[in-house]
Image (cartoon, rainbow, N blue to C red; front, side, top):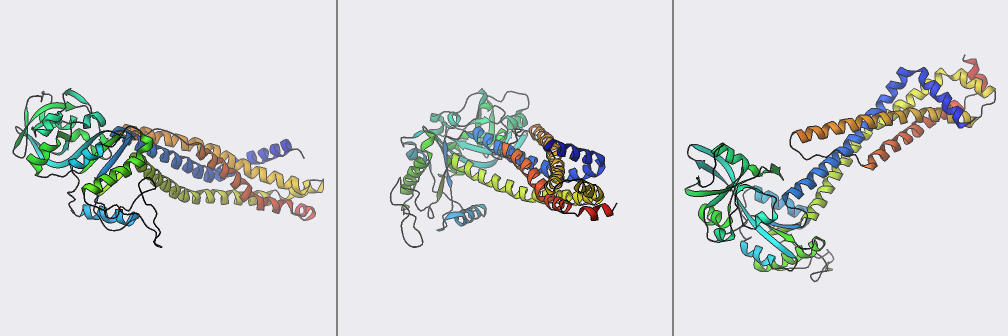
Length: 440
């Protein structure tokens, strides 16, 4: 029997029981649509993260932030450090000197430092609690903040601790409404700040709403408001992003020297040194009171996290896929029972084992492929609606379905059709023609 003939017979049998076939296909459709949605959501999250990093300043940056030294290494150290800081541990060792010293490295193009405080901002009768973003004048050259009108503060104003401020879009609207704030004074604690500029609307970046920020010179915030000398984090822009890891390690050595922390080689339990000098790898960071992270490293971690979440969701989706496959197997058993006499007649007139086997396998395969095609269309449509909803709420969520999603979808259709159809097909092919005909 030719392959075309087998397909025609299979399609005729499927059309003869449209409702039953549709219900069988439904299980496959749900599973395949879920696969497409999960993969598309993973791509959307990755794209969102990359867009946030680009909005933050790009991938050619290394960030240095405070860290509570725990004496431990790896994930346990990071968890304990985060917990200590969350519980109020104050790390005051990172300073502007560290920023300036790291800035002297040959691969560093520019840098800025940041101190953040939360204060009540007042103008006449209007008052709003806001994040005060103390930073160096160079931040405007690296960060993606743009000035709508007015100007940004200068390096001289920073070093002279001049109380000037640039308002974020939202806080300007809250305090001044439609009036021009330039040349007017806002009060933070007891200090009056001259408003010299208003930033363009930017939205939230890395969970921070920059439109509610008040930008002031870092030294002004340190000395005149908070009474501190330390910084919270600093960003260094690289000339060559390909040398990010080497530059980050050089930065660690400089900051350790400033903080009187010995740079010890990281050792295996056996005592064998993992590294000995700069260039051979990372040194022991367990005693560091700071953390240096490249943006590429951060994106790598985020890729790992989103990848793990995607796999976990796919594992859950696999349950519905298996259920759909079992449905295919069940329906094939029903079909065989109903068509026992037909099978016996065909075998009696000369149909071979492989002809019967091929017919029922192809029927199962067609059912699952139809389910895959419909599932892909529904999954793509749902994914597109998700992207539209996310963009409606201000998220930079791009609609995308990776090629591997289609491979998985069609791969499952083939495996499900063959895997769950083979046993019923073999059962049909092995029927004795005389016994089968006797069931008429």
